[in-house]
Image (tube, rainbow, N blue to C red):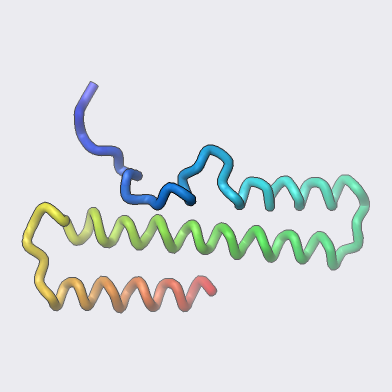
Length: 96
Protein backbone atom coordinates (compact mmCIF):
# COMPACT_ATOMS: atom_id res chain seq x y z
CA UNK A 1 0.00 0.00 0.00
CA UNK A 2 1.26 3.45 -0.90
CA UNK A 3 1.01 6.75 0.97
CA UNK A 4 0.47 8.70 -2.24
CA UNK A 5 -2.29 11.30 -2.01
CA UNK A 6 -5.65 10.44 -3.50
CA UNK A 7 -6.11 11.49 -7.10
CA UNK A 8 -9.53 12.87 -6.16
CA UNK A 9 -8.64 14.66 -2.91
CA UNK A 10 -9.05 18.02 -4.66
CA UNK A 11 -12.70 17.35 -5.58
CA UNK A 12 -14.98 19.39 -3.31
CA UNK A 13 -16.71 17.37 -0.57
CA UNK A 14 -20.15 18.14 -1.94
CA UNK A 15 -19.24 16.53 -5.26
CA UNK A 16 -17.65 13.51 -3.63
CA UNK A 17 -20.38 12.66 -1.10
CA UNK A 18 -21.51 9.03 -1.03
CA UNK A 19 -24.88 9.99 -2.52
CA UNK A 20 -24.21 12.98 -4.75
CA UNK A 21 -27.12 15.10 -5.95
CA UNK A 22 -26.90 13.74 -9.48
CA UNK A 23 -27.66 10.22 -8.22
CA UNK A 24 -31.04 11.41 -6.99
CA UNK A 25 -31.66 13.02 -10.36
CA UNK A 26 -30.85 9.77 -12.17
CA UNK A 27 -33.27 7.97 -9.85
CA UNK A 28 -35.92 10.61 -10.63
CA UNK A 29 -35.58 9.82 -14.33
CA UNK A 30 -36.21 6.15 -13.56
CA UNK A 31 -39.24 6.99 -11.42
CA UNK A 32 -40.82 9.15 -14.11
CA UNK A 33 -40.24 6.44 -16.71
CA UNK A 34 -41.71 3.76 -14.45
CA UNK A 35 -44.75 5.91 -13.67
CA UNK A 36 -45.56 6.55 -17.34
CA UNK A 37 -45.10 10.27 -16.74
CA UNK A 38 -45.55 12.89 -19.42
CA UNK A 39 -42.65 13.19 -21.85
CA UNK A 40 -42.08 16.77 -20.68
CA UNK A 41 -41.55 15.53 -17.09
CA UNK A 42 -39.03 12.93 -18.26
CA UNK A 43 -37.22 15.50 -20.40
CA UNK A 44 -37.14 17.97 -17.50
CA UNK A 45 -35.53 15.32 -15.26
CA UNK A 46 -33.01 14.39 -17.96
CA UNK A 47 -32.11 18.07 -18.38
CA UNK A 48 -31.62 18.51 -14.62
CA UNK A 49 -29.42 15.41 -14.48
CA UNK A 50 -27.35 16.62 -17.39
CA UNK A 51 -26.84 19.97 -15.67
CA UNK A 52 -25.69 18.26 -12.48
CA UNK A 53 -23.31 15.99 -14.40
CA UNK A 54 -21.89 18.94 -16.32
CA UNK A 55 -21.30 20.81 -13.05
CA UNK A 56 -19.58 17.75 -11.57
CA UNK A 57 -17.45 17.36 -14.70
CA UNK A 58 -16.42 21.02 -14.48
CA UNK A 59 -15.39 20.56 -10.82
CA UNK A 60 -13.31 17.46 -11.58
CA UNK A 61 -11.63 19.00 -14.64
CA UNK A 62 -10.88 22.22 -12.75
CA UNK A 63 -9.33 20.23 -9.93
CA UNK A 64 -7.28 18.23 -12.41
CA UNK A 65 -6.00 21.42 -14.03
CA UNK A 66 -5.17 23.13 -10.74
CA UNK A 67 -3.70 20.14 -8.87
CA UNK A 68 -2.19 17.91 -11.56
CA UNK A 69 -1.39 20.05 -14.57
CA UNK A 70 -0.36 23.03 -12.41
CA UNK A 71 1.45 21.12 -9.70
CA UNK A 72 0.99 23.09 -6.45
CA UNK A 73 4.24 21.58 -5.14
CA UNK A 74 6.17 23.34 -7.91
CA UNK A 75 6.57 26.97 -8.85
CA UNK A 76 3.75 28.09 -11.13
CA UNK A 77 4.10 31.29 -13.13
CA UNK A 78 1.44 33.99 -13.29
CA UNK A 79 1.08 33.24 -17.00
CA UNK A 80 0.35 29.58 -16.27
CA UNK A 81 -2.19 30.54 -13.62
CA UNK A 82 -3.91 32.96 -16.01
CA UNK A 83 -3.98 30.30 -18.75
CA UNK A 84 -5.53 27.81 -16.32
CA UNK A 85 -8.10 30.40 -15.20
CA UNK A 86 -8.98 31.13 -18.84
CA UNK A 87 -9.36 27.43 -19.58
CA UNK A 88 -11.59 26.86 -16.55
CA UNK A 89 -13.74 29.88 -17.48
CA UNK A 90 -14.13 28.61 -21.05
CA UNK A 91 -14.92 25.12 -19.81
CA UNK A 92 -17.62 26.35 -17.42
CA UNK A 93 -19.17 28.50 -20.16
CA UNK A 94 -19.19 25.54 -22.54
CA UNK A 95 -20.81 23.22 -19.99
CA UNK A 96 -23.64 25.65 -19.11
